[in-house]
Length: 86
Image (cartoon, rainbow, N blue to C red):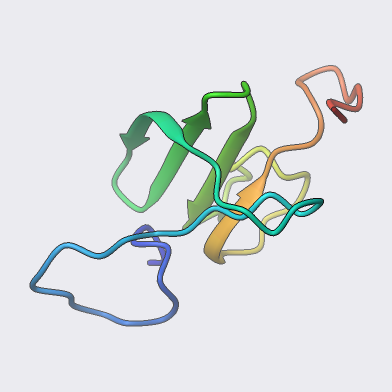
């Protein structure tokens, strides 16, 4: 359901590195916390940015729509629809 963050692969038998890239520098973020649900995953970076990916039929990724994400995407709005731009 996309919760692996590595594309549409259905089954992976060994651990995979999931790069979360800083758009401005093309360097990877350092993840300090990660949590997974039945079909989705969320990761918090050391700079406080939240990335989500996976199944999103109810909008549970917090990205403002109901599209499944196959790769990590930064959450840019809070619950009150305020921009979280850094």
